[in-house]
Length: 162
Image (cartoon, rainbow, N blue to C red; front, side, top):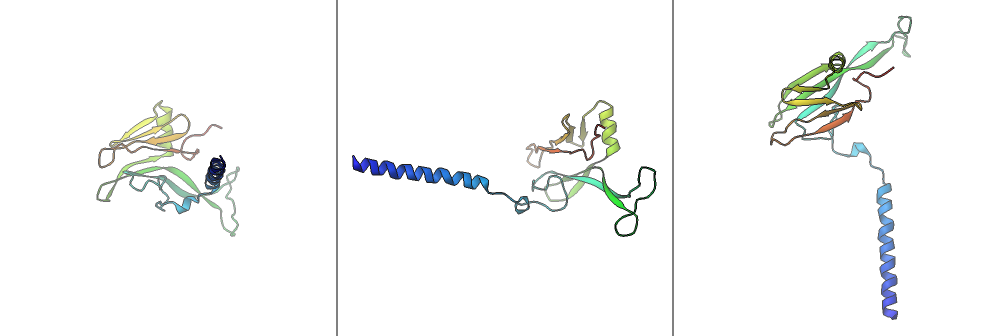
């Protein structure tokens, strides 16, 4: 009987040791920059073999106050800010060459939604604008497998309610 009780105690200690290790692993924070990704500002930077690359287009514009007067910046000159102007979708061929799929401005996206539509067929690439503010694209890759990528626009190009 003593033999079984020693075995039971050792088994119980072993089980408790293993169970206490899992929460420690779950608490470890992952630095997203340590994961493999492409650093060129693409939205789908972590999808290394994506058949479409998605960028937010942007431009730098001068800042004006409510009266229409230029705002002065901290450096003594006029203040400027970067604003999102739309989306750029670029297709990627199997040999790595690229081609333009679509360039959509925020006005194009607003016009689409105002017409009651929420989906575009862009040369075989589908772009859906969902009611919850997410974009979804689902083109086929070079092997014919459907690549699905969904992201939250966070109000960058979609009209926001005032």
